[in-house]
Amino acid sequence: MYIAIGMLVFLGVIALWMVGTYNQLVMLRQSVRESWSAIETELRRRYDLIPNLVETVKGYAGHEKDTLEAVIKARNSAAAVSGAPEAQAMANNVLTGALTKLMALSEAYPQLKANENFNQLQNALNDTETRISQARRFYNANVREMNTAVETFPSVLISGPMGFKPQTYFGIEDPNAFDPVKVSFSSGNQSQEPGGVIKLNSAVEEKRN
Image 1 (cartoon, helix red, strand yellow):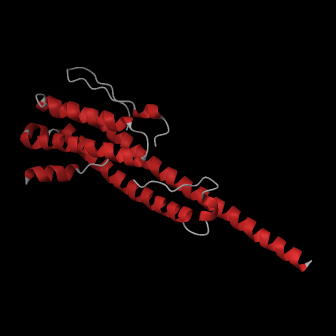
Image 2 (tube, helix red, strand yellow; image 1 turned 135 degrees about the horizontal axis):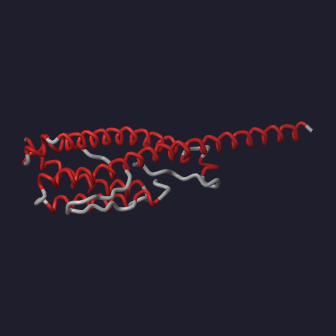
Image 3 (cartoon, helix red, strand yellow; image 1 turned 90 degrees about the vertical axis):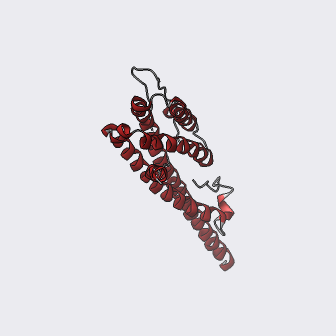
């Protein structure tokens, strides 16, 4: 009888541990998803700002067509990626390179550099960069905590069977939110859709040096 009671107590403790561990893993996974959503929100803002920036630069440096088109092409390619963080980071690195060249044009065109709209857009992009950096740090911290819980003993005993997997360090759930933007290099209206990581100020400083 004592053995039976002991077994019931043991099984009860195991059951409580499994429930607690499962709930913890669920909360950690939700934190990762929410923090990644914050990154994507800022990426959408970045993608939304770029067409206006291109159109502003075009008004003062329209003959820099290759640079302008390179930015739009990189923007569209980055916006089309809605998969793993690695893929999005790689695409946004290409976009950052194109934007760096675009922002450096302000040093060659004083009137562009003095343009109020250009400065406002540059400040907005810098603000977005800061927000992305903050969101990225928060996301990676959540990923680290999640991965630790998934891969360490004893939670590893149930994480795999229950479908919890290590997350990737840095999702758009609606792929239509990342539709490519259409920007005309001729006069007229432009269409733009919503929505990384730019060091715009450092790019300009590098050009000055």
